Length: 227
Image (cartoon, rainbow, N blue to C red; front, side, top):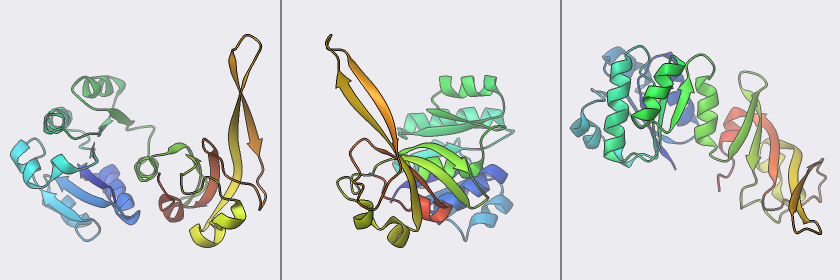
């Protein structure tokens, strides 16, 4: 089970915290405003009213031990910058910061953010999918609660046929296609890759390196094996 800190509980942060918690992850939700903290208190592992630029307070709440921290403070850009700096100093391995402009994104990267979430282009649900499915390479929202995703084949699936995997029965998702690359060497010892799209049948076996194109309910997709 992964552990995330969502810092800033405006609309984006609130939706993200709930989506990660619904996916089965531990979520620490943080905001300076009591009303925002109270809105998610019953939906996450821990909801705390605190100053996210206070290093000692972050350590006391176990933020230094999370797998990733997502800073979604919004309009208070100075607080976002100071929070990212503090998280970096604490050694948080993955820091994602939401930026309102390209310039803000550049500044946040300079001070330690590993990834930037664009305020205008990225939804909370899209980031929830990225965090819940680390091997996700592409995501297409079909409806509010159903999506099509491209994921690297989990090791638990490799070597097994679709009949053995029982994806529809056991995982409540459907495998639409498999993207597979074949590498060949020419006479000059140059390696070339040939990409193939396979429409799977019951006896199709998953190979290491396959990218699975899967469709299903967001909850079911978030529960697929991650390794």
